[in-house]
Figure 1: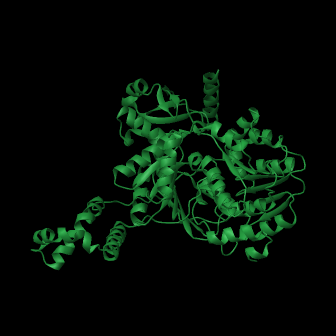
Figure 2: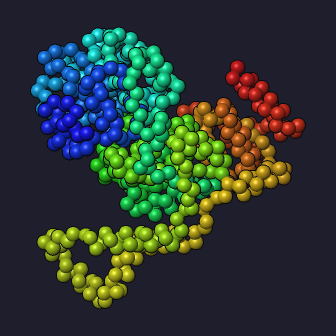
Figure 3: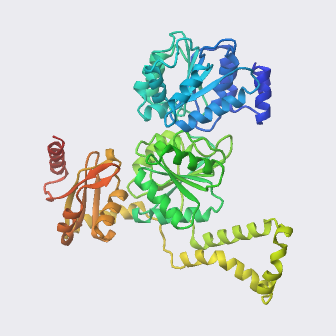
Length: 556
């Protein structure tokens, strides 16, 4: 079925033809005709990047009556970036509809300007939950005549803690409204919203529930924690045309990885919650305009990013919530294109990988990191291709050529080619000259880890007051210890990250120094403290009891 057969107005059909819409995507083929003939409640499940905005946006605009000033459509989405993206799309779809007004409201910008825009008349409001609740509390927005409420990226909004805000907003809307819910996954919380606010919703599922986009190839590389960044560099070097998104768990790690990449000469910048809105906008605009090759981001900061042509999504760490993997990987392979989702995993994450595979209903392809010789060859011929395809502006360089020829005229053709290649190429030859194998074997690592922990009597045990719920992971704790104390990785032994606190082993000779220096260390806005604890005997059950009672005392 083509767009012109769906029942859309001529104004909308002409607008989307100008945009370049040719064939509707599977979710559009099912949703648009249904919503135009039966504007009932609807649940649309499809992976990110499959065209959901047009699926709900085109029918919604088709229903708007511009002779009325009242707000008739309300779209709620999780982030500022997605809010702006949806508003821009609706403006493009409706450019031929005279008098139709779309207003976007979101945090991080002047609320008074948004209030004035709404006061002029907003047929459709696109909003983030927090800012919309603020406007409702100020009595600056009226939702009593809304015909249709659309919840876009519903699972993302619930993951971000917007459940109460969504409840408060929906209570301001008429009971007989239509609710259209679009989501990439269908966790229990989203099902609860459907149960409470929808009446016999029509369900459209493209692919399986919670299933990953079929155009995404999922690769996994197993590396030791200390080799994680070196492995990342190899993957980037092997893909010189990468236009990628790298996900880290914490703001600190995001900044660290981006800083390292920039220091090593890569076109990369971070996107995380510590940046001001103006800084975030600057980074996103650079990335969207492809003036930036790599964006390093946290899950929260990257929510709502809608950028075409992303070739790779790299999970520097797997997400804490395995369902977030679907959202991360869905940033590539948009609009029918193919993409690659790469997971860097350590030797202890086999269970988490299995959980993700069950959710996305596909298996990771376990890969070996690119061989240094292949990386060097890939970079060399990429550079040669760029040189051979470079456009020459004879007029611009004409005045410089006599001096250039004077300096280079003594070299024959082969010598000249070698020198130009070497200027750029020597850095790769030098970096990979003595490179080692970074691939880790999960089974052998587990065995060696067990032996090391059993026989290591030269280390003391230390308690840390932060855990997984504070965003702490093994890599972050190891870096904090080494950065703060000056110790090398080899001085640190077993690390256990639990929900509310953690433990690690370190050389006995460093105990006094560790306890002294590792006090009131800032980690993601929280104070980290370390104290020595006694190693217990008597098995794991006794150890767990000790840990729980310790945590109870510290929480009082």
